[in-house]
Image 1: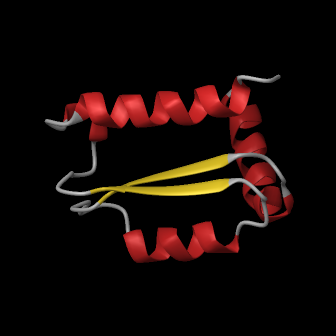
Image 2 (image 1 turned 30 degrees about the horizontal axis):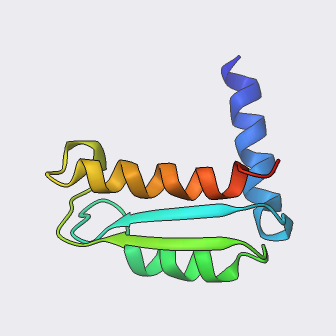
Length: 87
């Protein structure tokens, strides 16, 4: 099982820049683990016609434990709803 997950992850990483699917990149402004500048550059390289970059200000790495978790969840849920409404 884990081998298949690793293989799938490698295939996705190799092909992510050629996919044309909706992609949401969510970042925490005060993240001490993720390099936000590198993630912004990664996001900008995506060729998809529907990509969204959202930076939550005043947040640390683990977004589900932030004070504004309701705002975070609502944003993500709305993003998904908009893209699945007419399918």
